[in-house]
Length: 157
Image 1 (cartoon, rainbow, N blue to C red):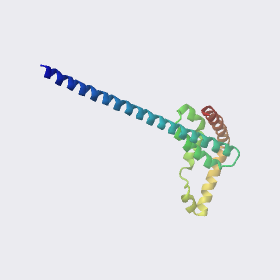
Image 2 (cartoon, rainbow, N blue to C red; image 1 turned 90 degrees about the horizontal axis):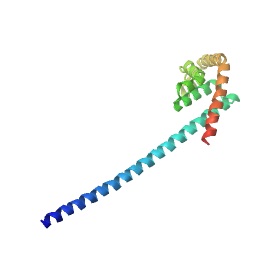
Image 3 (tube, rainbow, N blue to C red; image 1 turned 45 degrees about the horizontal axis):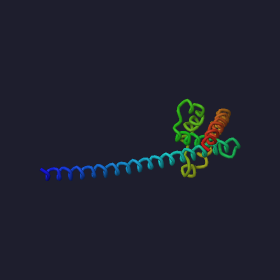
Image 4 (cartoon, helix red, strand yellow; image 1 turned 135 degrees about the vertical axis):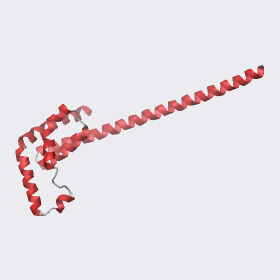
């Protein structure tokens, strides 16, 4: 009978040791997961901050006519999309989406360089027409961008 108790006690000690080992392992996994989540959150926050800084820089450059209007609108639209803003907030920036849609067919980068001069002139004329058609709305939206995102940058600091 004492042999039974010795074996049962040994099994209990082994199982308790294994349970303790599993608990320690689980705690290590939880800590590693928390650190990973924290690192991802910090990386995400840094990316969002960088996007917001880019948005304000482009908007300020547009305001001071240091950036072509059409190019600025396209860049702002792409950056604003990356923020995944809620629709009510996005409504302040619809002109950027409109300009983007109206110029989406125009080649960029190497495609632009490869165009013949005549074709470039046609596209340039169209861009000038779009720019003049939406000039007031673009200026208002640029001001809204600066106001909104400058506040976001200041509150993040």
